Structures are given as C-alpha cells and as structure tokens.
Length: 63
Image 1: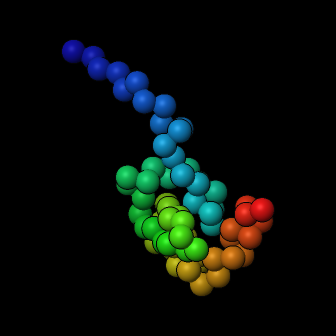
Image 2: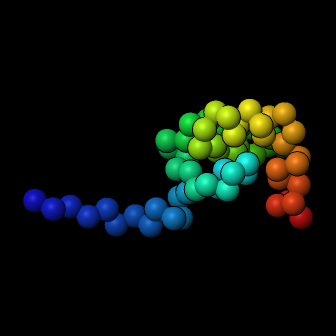
Image 3: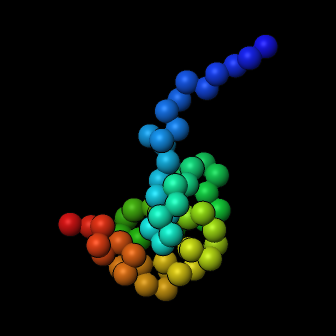
C-alpha cells in the first residue's frame, strides 16, 4: 500500500541563519531564542556560532 504525504514541507521549514540550510523545526539539531524569536539550526556548530554574535547573522535579515 502506497501513502502520500500531502503536506507542503517547504512551508514548514525554517532557514538556519548561519549556513542558510533549510531545517525542519521538528527535527532541528539545535535551537536558540533571541529577541523573542526561535532560530533553528542544522548542527550544534551553527548554533554555537550564532550564540556568540547573533546580530551578525540576523542583522541583514531584519528590517
């Protein structure tokens, strides 16, 4: 029996602010909270880099 997932996975993915990789929030390797927003990471190394200087990674993204 074949099943199909009808979800649009792209709509549920977050972007790792360090490397730009798309990450599923449900299975992200790590998360960080910054200024009331949750950021999702593909690896602990990306989270560690973000935590050292979050503004350098989101500064260009935020208006």
